[in-house]
Image (cartoon, rainbow, N blue to C red):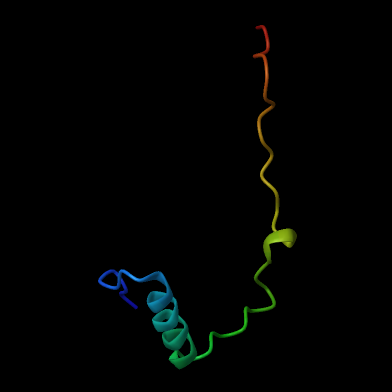
Length: 53
């Protein structure tokens, strides 16, 4: 929903909430899709001083 033209924040909130209620419900996430805590974590490089070669 485009609410760029509405300047009043309260009015914009009302419009957005009404649009959200009118929109069809989102589908449930599939079982095979990992949620945030279940996702594989990326191994980050160590921070701090660089190793001497």
